[in-house]
Length: 402
Image 1: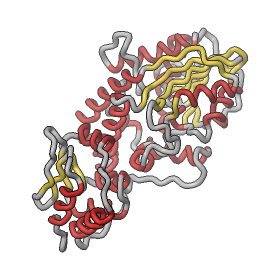
Image 2 (image 1 turned 90 degrees about the vertical axis):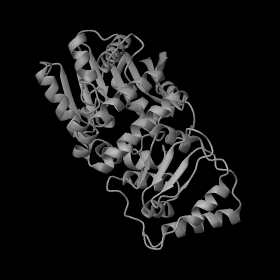
Image 3 (image 1 turned 180 degrees about the horizontal axis):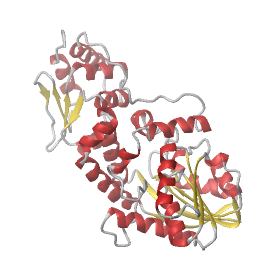
Image 4 (image 1 turned 120 degrees about the horizontal axis):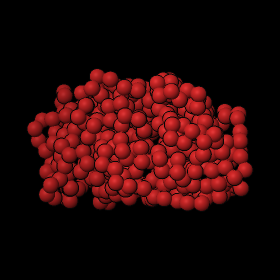
């Protein structure tokens, strides 16, 4: 903290931002107070946080500082709303220069810390098989035990279905899986491909409840190992096969049905047409596809979801508008038959995940480390906000191959 002094920064912040729906509290005990009631407080714990912002202004610098515990907030949901909604008033060049000088003075002689160890920066062409494998490994690096902290017993990692009267997360996830089986009209002896099978909940439910033969594919080796173990324990090994495999590597064809649950968000604008045409090619004539995925209702930028999500949680994960997904289906010869929006159900689902995660936060730190545990807490709250503010929703689209 050598030679750091926050006085100039505090003065210029008050001048540049006369309306402030937040308080900024500094490590030296000083603060810039909010001008509105019930405002969240951002605690700047060290000049190192400002050093991060000097190196990477904006979301990335904030994310790095938060990951390393250099920035804390007293109300994470309120703070996220400020970050998303607060519009900085026009700042004149002279004022901006004074703000920058104040930031430098507050930083003192502090050098920027190295980026967090949990940060990933993918390179090369987006959504190649190799890059997708690396992105998936980063997301699931924490291990199966980490996800067991907040998922239900079936390890279903997608939006549950509450509107049918479920009262627990387990009931709501079972209702969702049964609903998909019903929409696909699965019959005994049929063949189902489950793309992005996770820990196998859909495949196991379909085999157990409907007597279908299932191939589940995922790019995560730990997921496939756990799913195969569960199939053996439940006596379903003869009906279900799990494979570490990209959708572009499936060589079998003639499936009666395909379920794609929480997968389309990771395909990207670059590959959405290829994805749907590939699934079309894997279906028999008259076969059914159920695509369950997050879709944007606002901010239709299809490049990325911001530096924090891109670097720390979901590399290359970008929800697309429903219209774009439907267009890709129709181009491929998949005819949409039924669409159901269940976005509010995801807000309820994530609320349950947050409760479970925060009750076992110390275990999350022990399993994944402080940085990753903090970023997952931030991610879960930010994800819920996306559904409560109608930035995004979830659609189930049933389509058939002509």
